[in-house]
Length: 236
Length: 400
Image (cartoon, rainbow over all chains, first blue to last red):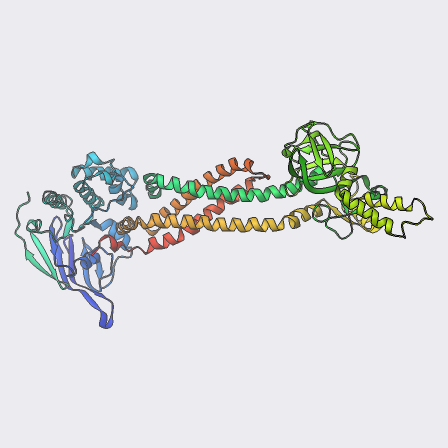
């Protein structure tokens, strides 16, 4: 069992069947503790996105097990009936592009998740504003996404990922569209938030600039993960 | 929970308003087409109402006098009047023709009415100006839509008539305004030949030894006189005593006079069910086509709006939004588009209807039916977009 955070054991994913079958993930093992930010690095086609989709309960792994917090969510089959609710309540997503909902203002973009979970509008907005303040974008709370800079949008996206206090956040190349200063800011925010909310964060990245900031890094190649200790360079 | 559809509409309000206006104009045309049909039905009913008759006696086995030509002797009314239950009878003729006004003319239904008093079957029930016809010849009461004024002189065949009274909403079943003239003039107008034709007819009769007998003086003149006069009318309008049933009196006339008799319900069936049936089908086809076009427009717009939001829908699904919420968002947008379209369409039809040359009757029940039809069309039209939205994979938000 994981001490909260996320634990993945012998996870595999096969696409198709017979002679055309492709084994995208062969033997994935990962453990990310609460408050920890780890990097997941690998070349194109190595299985990063497949792993992220499996972790995000978007596609079905073929075999293996996943434990999220204290709950076994997959053990050769899904142990959770409502994957949509699992994604909503237990997993935060931060994407390469912020993908904010263009017709909702910043507050409602963040507050939407708790509202979907049944939290009252006022309580959801209060939660959103708390996070926006923590991420220093509270002054844009009423702005529409199109009025924000790239860095502000990404901070709002992080706030959306955190708003339901999920045990794990999956970040898919969150710094790709940003310059190095903003990229480092985003990584620092993710580290701060991980510690503050006791959240396990997995950052999939190609970004050379941020790789040294991870204390632990998982490499993935041909569907197999290898753990490598990071340099543990302090964050700026 | 916030309304995703509402927020999206507010965000892209211009797109919705302008699309709604475009759709509304089309809906306006649809409502007006329905109004044209209602107007035709109402024209028919008004014609019957204004006849002030309970029964129409016409030539045997004809659908006269409005749907088919009918010719019956003009002295038949006397014998019908003697039958039990008959309160009043009056001859009437109906002839649709061009009525001259200076160097122009107007299409009208010329109705020949018998001398009498207001309330006589066939007479215009009420005037808005002037007086009823009081002379036996060359006076006319006209519907105001003919654009004639009191004192104007109109020309029917070779004769001139002075307009002495104006009426309103007196039209034929095809919407042509009615011109009332004395029945003798109307009888003459129906079969009036030109001078050359009369001369030719006289010569033929003179050459016929059967009619031109030297030993029978006056025969030739009598025959010629019979050729130039018309002793027929199109119908006898009958009013019955209140204590008698119309079908009972009608049956008496059928049996004893060997004529065809229609009561109000039968005449309405002829006018609405037969006379305007083809037009009704034509309008029905237009309505179906317009409904399909409306549906296609809504489907296209909603599909396009949904296509523009594929990434957002994928994100919404990924973060746990239920399919029901997404379907509801698309449906609500489609319905809002329909409501905007209906409001614009209703306003358009209301303002456009009086400009049509024929009567356009916008009925509340059509508007209600139209409103719910539009909503149904919007729901059906959004099915394609909904299907597409449901197929969007939340994994698209992650990429890879």
